[in-house]
Amino acid sequence: MKSKTKFVCSECGYETRKWLGKCPACMQWNTFTEEAAKVTPGGISTAPLPKAIPLTEVSKESEERVKTGMQELDRVLGGGIVDGSLVLVGGDPGIGKSTLLLQICGILSQNIRILYVSGEESVKQIKLRAERLSINNENILMVSETNFENINRLIEEIKPQVVILDSIQTVYSEELTSAPGSVSQVREVTGQLMRIAKGQGITVFIVGHVTKEGAIAGPRVLEHMVDTVLYFEGERHQNYRILRAVKNRFGSTNEIGLFEMTQQGLKEVNNPSGLLLDSRAKDQSGSVIVASLEGTRPMLLEIQALVTPTSFGIARRMATGIDYNRLTMLLAVLEKKIGMQLFNHDAYVNVVGGIRIDEPACDLGVIASVAGSFKNMPVDPDIVVIGEVGLTGEVRQVNQVDKRIMEAKRLGFKKCLVPSGNKSSSVTNIDGIELLFAGTVEEALGFLF
Ligand code: TYD
Ligand code: MG
Image (cartoon, rainbow, N blue to C red):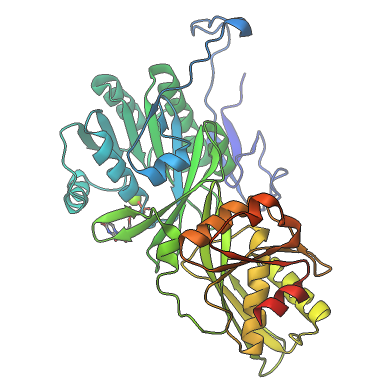
């Protein structure tokens, strides 16, 4: 006799027969909830047996892709939407997921039939939003429904090429007794959608809200089931939105897409460097331009630092858009190798535009902005600073430096400070821009101040 209930960790989806106080998988306390187990009848499966084919006979045809026409989205997807794929779009509530998907519907509906299932908004509410976005097409079929069995029947009846489910946390399957949004429901519905996507070649977009811990509820469970996971992020009070692929079975995961939220919905940002540098205050100390590489695209970003004497107690450090630990490491390099007395100074560093940088190639720019604010000296507004910084104060070479220099040149910068290690003929042959080569932080600061 099979057990009829099981206990599922609401954080990581770990399952046990007995209740536990602490989850052995993710070490969280009090996360187990009781859920009815789905009883699978024993015996032989009735599903049709697939045929195994020799590798030599597998066709090499690449998967069909549908371009959405939004370049920023197509890039993140790896060149367009793959037929029959399951795509999860995650992000904080209110960031713009429903808006993005409705806009995708607007484009695709010109020649594709779409079923838009919302468990969050009424059809009327979506209509209002669609009107604001100037989207109106009979190929978009709207339904407000949360019962998965009904959704499944609708898909069979309508036979759409694309299904949008907004959001996974609101949908439930009758086969399970647990509440919508619980790990078993989210997993069950996603599993069913995967079957629909693969079995009928329908592309399915699932919206997933992110919990405060930063993972999509029913967290990792969901991410490993789908083909593509896209995160939509950005500061709520700023207008930029970044679409990032964190998993992609059909493409690279380091591409990002940039959008701006406007009154008419999301607008693509095709020239991010230009836009992000638009409001730059030149000749201000603490402002430095760096060249970061996001996927295949170089992007010029402004780093700002403010260094002030600590009035009492321990010096404060704040990092927005760069890693906090990386900042403290760079401050330590300045202190030890340059002799800059930062221990009694507060240091605030910010990447303008709400963009997050994970690239060490921006280290030297951070160092330059902190040093500039400390000395109260602006750097030349026509220079872009490129280089990784090591613990001994050496400036280390970065990859694809020519791409970064070309972007600086395209935006009208006159000089680039680059690591000595990157000196090669392909770099020195770029005309129209002066290159300054630095091997150490000391040398680099010598060029700048
Ligand atoms: P929404 O797509 O509802 O977010 P999510 O589905 O991720 O919860 O977008 C929410 C915000 O976007 C909302 O605060 C209003 C804003 N917005 C605009 O600024 N312009 C627009 O054209 C639209 C449709 C929304
Ligand atoms: Mg929404």
